[in-house]
Image (cartoon, rainbow, N blue to C red):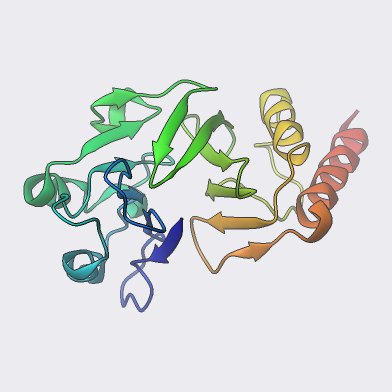
Length: 200
């Protein structure tokens, strides 16, 4: 699997727009965009993004949540490429409403949908066990302060993520994070538990 950030070099505030394509561009691969972002650079890069021979430029879009900086280009991408759109919320204008635990075929890999309400009630992460990578959207991976979003549901979902073997984190904003020996996510879970204890 190859992963490109089509929002790299953006001039306006935007989320990342991660483009996933199979390593060998095989017939069964599904070129996928994780979040559309909102900078026109995404549309320009999408025109020449790698794809399989004879395949559509983009076959599906998965939205990590419905905030404007992650979905603003969706109408234009729909018009240009007619991809199937997946999202957790009904409000995302998705073709398929996702559920926690769903499995999606993205590029040439299988990803698990992990619902993690906190940043928003419709926030999801996408986890690939084979490559040990996760697309985290705006889920706070590095915890460094108190926040009211850390309720029981968030804690349970975050502990679920922390239990997975993950080596690379592709966030909604900023560059990929290396999770050496699980340290980044485990340290955040420890911090979260400390925050919870101080509130009790």
